[in-house]
Image 1 (tube, helix red, strand yellow):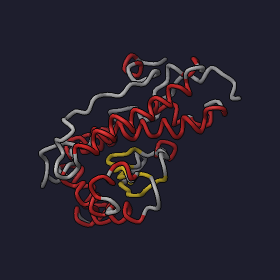
Image 2 (tube, rainbow, N blue to C red):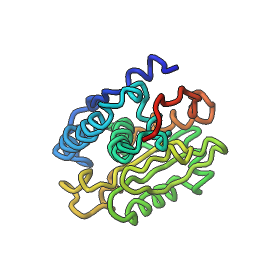
Image 3 (cartoon, helix red, strand yellow):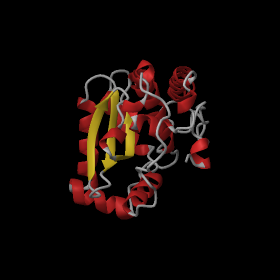
Image 4 (cartoon, rainbow, N blue to C red):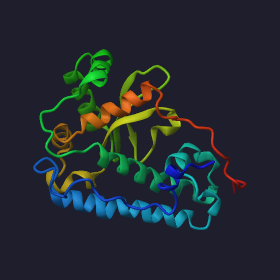
Length: 233
């Protein structure tokens, strides 16, 4: 049965407002980029996703996480669109949550800091790996810090386009957008400069809370839910 909370995040999907002003992340992310990125690009993903789902009422009660997690059950006619546009929506709505103004110079603390030291050697080594992975990624995509709920280990890797880590049964803790619309107005082709500036706008408290929730099993990451009531076509 779909919960009331899930109902708030189902079809028709809507664009939530940014939790801060467009210029709040200056000078690291400029106001023009934030406005275009959020109001234009993210909205376009939602618009195309809703259009694809419109004629499939049997899918209207499912969250975007569930639709992507069960990608192979989505009707063939809209499967790629749900993957592409739905992935864009999922990643962006998470991306806005891990950004925060006024946090330049802050670092992870508590369990998150301990886990980073354990799995990467140090915070600086983790940062270097994250930036290197994002810099070397070819074309568009995302760079992730994830936790494997099975063993609590942290990993850094990139994925192309809007490929989600949900199908890998891993949970994203931190992501950064490698599509040119995320940085080109300010940094031009300097993706490495953009990635280095990113450390000044990360909401480490939120990232740490996500990790602690996974480790404490406070959220049911892979719930058994109702089956899609259709035959794949």
